[in-house]
Image (cartoon, rainbow, N blue to C red; front, side, top):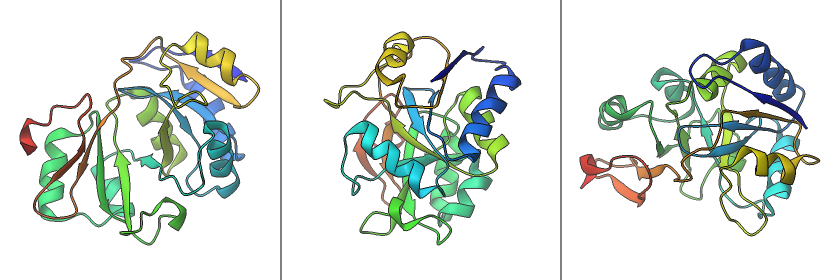
Length: 203
């Protein structure tokens, strides 16, 4: 594994570019978000996605969310109602995963049975720079060990996944609290998981 420590506010572009090269060549990376470290790959690379399932010891039916650059980007990959748009505009970027109807551009591997997808726009400069530079979404699923326990210390993550992941971008230890998941499929939002984001808007 290539391992690079980045400045969290002004990440070094030379390291970002190395991660972009890895993603474009079908690699798997680990990167920071505003909540946890995430495993990432290009959402359009089926083989890389399969590698993440293997690394996490999860079945191929498990649904992973993905990361977009901004609200405009989300509208390419999901059907966004006026209500959903207004809601997300208040909260993004931030520690939320929003469940929305999938657009046909998204690989069906990432669709739920209800034809929905989970989308993130994290408040993290490293993650957002990655998506913007790559030009399309990156898979976003938390870094866990094979028991499903969340890992937030980069040194521990590096040791465990050194031979399984191609590259890691580190910015120090993270909170260890996952994002809040909000279903915006209808005009009545549903809180799927209460995490690090403020959900008072939905209560």
